[in-house]
Length: 235
Length: 303
Image 1 (cartoon, rainbow over the protein chains, first blue to last red):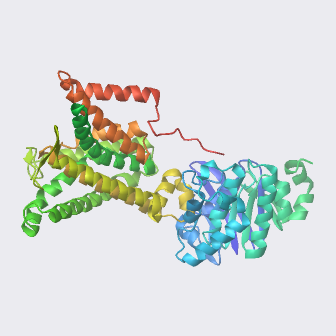
Image 2 (cartoon, rainbow over the protein chains, first blue to last red):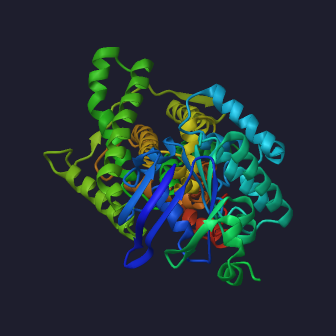
Image 3 (tube, rainbow over the protein chains, first blue to last red):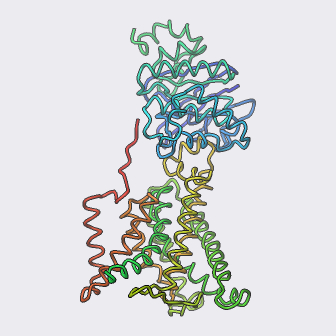
């Protein structure tokens, strides 16, 4: 469904990605793990059009998308839940979800999808009219995911959904991620620092180090790799 | 007692105009984080638009007709909305990713460009021109109080516009998008919100309000010239800061408060020459206690 080939991205004179290639098959959960500053977020930002790529290609659904603007990319169903959640703290939970559906015209679909999001995360429904800045970190993450689901995604990119969240909520959120993948057939690219968790829910994994893919393979295999164990799993 | 009531009435009339202008400053600050110094010139252009089309509307709708007056407001607002959007498109958008200081200096440049181009005799000319009486002015006597119908008009128009603004910003899709863009542009982009179009709309809305404020100010003045926007513009900017820049109710509160302060200070016998010193002195005191403005909050981001 998505193929990156030899992607290069620079911020000014600093090269963030030098030649990242990866593939995400339809309906799968693929994870991209790596340390801070390895280029995980940059990869996602390049995919959603927030940063320009200097070379390489991004093929989504058979079409190159690296020259498109962010709103054109969202319209194609490629949705990005950014690092740090970036919910609109000054908007209510409901208004945040409405913003997710900004490009959607079908009112019936929006209201059905909103019900679906509320059934995934009942906590959000309880806080529907609250300013989202008053939510806990975990609830904001739920909202960020819910908001992306209202953009009618076919391909969902999650950037560090476990970051700074109470362990109990992390468990709930990851269960829901797997559920969304299974029930809605949504393809997911998961970026995580918490490698253990990410390798458990994904089928295939890439390890990124200083802007390059260090190794890749089926998740159980990557998890057993001594190098990965030493560097990312603390074994 | 009567003296106080009279000052409150006069102050509200002035404060309402400041509030309308201050909304434009604060909205633009909300989405772009810079002060659009050319805003006060859009106000002046609004008054001149009205000045030039008023005779034509009078021919069409009759002398001092209410409908004609409403039409005049709408045309001037529409013209200035276009001017505001054009300024943003030509002067500010090319600098979107530059440091804010660059944009700020550009805004001052745009302001000077408009003011001094307008003063050229072949453009608007620098001599003050009498602003036409759009509606017959009455004085309403309530006991010892005298209320000018122009103040009633100003307050009425302001209240209607504030209600409309509240509705647009709080209840419509584009207003919600405006608030989203002002909080986090990047997240808004990820939702597919066309951020440039929202910013353009914000300039249009703010400039339309400035045009109407310009007409209301001209009615009070009662002559207009190319530098007429500078004084009310400066005060409205201060009002926006006083209320908490970026905060819409704050801009209204700041505008009304400044109008009242100025009128009260000006009404004290023997002190009327010091009215700006008194009004701005009080402002400095308020900002010393509440640096983010009355309703402003220093932004805290949850990580």
